[in-house]
Length: 368
Image (cartoon, rainbow, N blue to C red; front, side, top):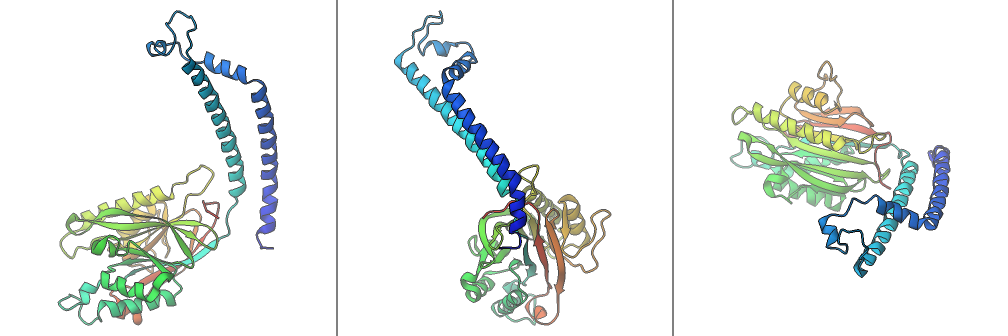
């Protein structure tokens, strides 16, 4: 017996009682409708609006004389079928609501580790690139893969992830890891990709959002809905890279990009019902900002940073940089945040790898 089994059974008792009551009411309702079907039909007909000109062309001359044609009888038969379909639909909807009450018991907590890693694009360290002293992109991605796997990361937002690095990662991980968009959108789309351990997560949906990058040029950033295989819990993951000011002032474009990311985060985490938490939503990336990004996201997206800090008043966490992991507040808790720098990380990139443990709790949507 699982450790959560007894509490669930106890919580199901009132739900089962409701289900039995609803089943009895539905049975009585069906007998009542069978005995009084003409009355129900007459009531429906009495509630119809008065005949219009178009009604006259369908079998009446507007004088009150009944000139019903055979096709009108077919219409009445169709009306009965429609009524029965509506009745069945109402019964099904009511049954589904009761089932939802039973299924609405919270899933087991899900725990996993999430990371954000700007892996320094291969073009920066290729001949003629602007980052001398680093190994080529393929070699560095091999080390990055070691860091991701060695630190038990199961979801990672990758920035500056170019085609050569994608090839290395795909070769080393095989079917053990999923990537989106990877190379599905070409060289522009691959640069901001989300990776996940397929033994832990299952892909449900995958999309992109356009944000402005250097000089306002639009680039796609990914967001995916993943199912945690161990618990059925769902979570959205967004990954971004907002423009730096290395090619001219980019504050304006960063502000627009951050606003679009906040709007997406709010949309994805919005609850579908009033008595339910929304789907937990995470935003990872290189924001090229510290306070501006932190304050904007934590205040306007009802979010928290994995490394702490406060939204109101806005106070940065002590261990901060321009690489961030944010998560929606309800049902999400962070712990054991690490800003991994030095050693092998410094051979891979000019950015740290940041990661954190996550626990998902509460009655958020999940699937079996």
